[in-house]
Image (tube, rainbow, N blue to C red):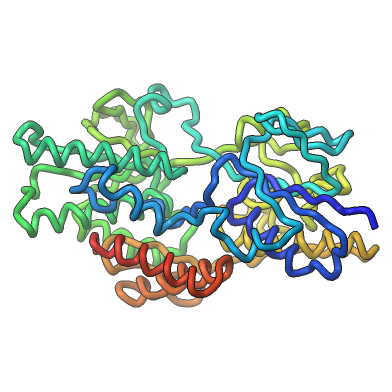
Length: 424
């Protein structure tokens, strides 16, 4: 029997889970081979990026990079329940081109990988919308490298402050979504601890959160947004809603208020969490995309016009049939999409009709907001404070158990919890 070759581009939530789901269907797939492609050797649990960027800020990155990284990253080679499968391999590299005619994926290393089925799960990258100076002076928070760059900038201030060289730190977070709110809250909580320890004066720092829309956390219901605003106020964070960012300089930004007034705002550290866009590389793959550049897919995640190329996760433009909105960029959405793609690949080989997906209109989400405090939104009700925090910790552990043997999942989760709890 000829081997059926499946190539998965991207080892994030969608890509890694697709490989796992396909492995579960090995009896139905019969003779098959899976190649998982990613430029990085680790699987990053992005919901913990804010912890990495704000963790152990009093220590140099060299002193704690290992433990901060270990709590949020899974080395691909360490995922035993994938690597032990003889018909699954990992190829590290970036995709240069996708040749749909010859059914090949060509890596930047020169390696050519043939496929019978291709799954694209490459995610997205930060978008600065052409705002002057944003690409140069703002620090994005999308990758592990980004998180450590932000952390290093704040560590340098703390070191200079203790040496008597720096007098004041102004942090500006651009984007009032979940990522920006989480980072601002966790950072403020850390500085509160420094104030309590009398190593920092309260008036020697300020944190502002800028949101162009009328309110923060726009995808959440009003009660959740209200709780979040109260928590931010309690942490001393200045929320600037209905405020547009016009330009960015080395140590300042220009903002435009709702009434059209332009104001200059000093900012020593500018963290960018305002938006995302498709990877530039995807443009050269000759795939159908929507007006924003996201890959168009059918309800069963086939790329429009294709019979064997799928796209899932943040890079795909999957529109909810009722709300007519794109499915939100959530890890849980990518995981569910991966299961459907794996099932559809198996069904195609069995000559069965594929499955379609109708996503939920509401998702269970948790927003950590500094210390042992989080808001867990279940749609019909929400939990705040320590209860929301515990929901988040359980969700993290459940995810690690889903991709690792239980003992390794517990070790990863507990080591991360121990490190990140220092800020709590």
